[in-house]
Length: 482
Image (cartoon, rainbow, N blue to C red; front, top):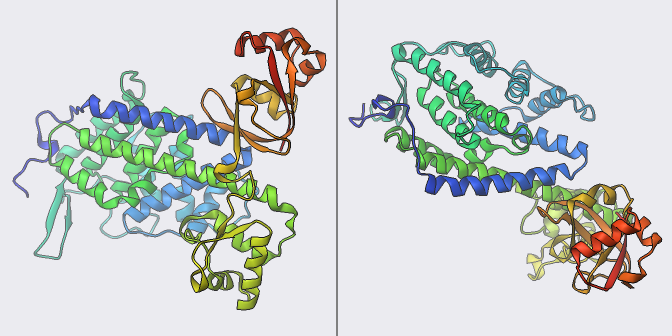
């Protein structure tokens, strides 16, 4: 064993500490982003929100296994999750004992009625991770045996010991202390729930109580801790996906911290960075889904053939298969399964219809990307407007069909498609089309204006006086929901 002390050998174990000057700013930033993510998700229809949850759970499971260099059948896991979540619009697919067990495990993790963490629950998870027949070396649903537990790399005779876990005779007492802390800390107001999740992750992985499956159980316990803190947002993002994309850093920071003191600042800072990264990724995906929806709202009357729709969806979906640099004629030919001449003709037609735009490169290097400037629905060319949150329900229900603004807030024209967000937190909730913009004097406001604002005339004048005190000349923006 390395002659340096492992963290669990310290007489101070496990009295962890950290530098709040480093950690607190990260916590504030991460919480702000989580709030915006939840707001974006809540602004979407229930069907979309359920899909976001399914996708995040699936990504967490697949990524957690991939961190250990194991691949799962994504289709069977997705089918098992969809069934457990009650998503009846998903076509039933083939499931396995393994995929069903993993889905049950995720339901435990995200169970709002869950009680305390117990040994039997962890053992059940372990059995679901390793359905029969389990590997011969593995004590399925039991703590590890007496053999020294080491994390090593390198060939036989040249092994490098990255970590050595507490001995078996010490393990039960360590795990009892961990579970007691896990259950009690849930109700400690002084401990930030996000930090609690990071501490739980480090503590359990350091104990390494199984011959195999330690990382996957650890990441499930982390998700459970996050869910206990906030049962909405954690269903939307996948921390394991961020860890997978930074796997080398993950092992490096764990090893350095497990060889160090009780100061977990470096680990907690890295954990919060991964949490923030996963929230950013989830937010981009929701924005991408929204952009795709809006794109098809604009182009739904184009009567495009199936080949063109298929390619456009690939471009709109982005990701590894979305042709981030644009699609060439040759790539179009392969994706759409058409001739070269047809591919060229289809691309020219999509440009003419405003669906695609051609990049600057010419000749054989020509590529085509989604046209973000043709439609005011898409990208940065769409105008924005904000409303106080108290008006959101009326706008969405079609009860509020005008807004009264001062000149600087009325830079719109008939036909403009406008992105609408809440003033308080800048969370998007719908799109509107401007019908007209006309001047109106405060003293000329009447009952018709009040009806269009879904207020009494007295209430309307009070609201306008509160927002624009003393202003006499206003502009009435009439709009419809789209």
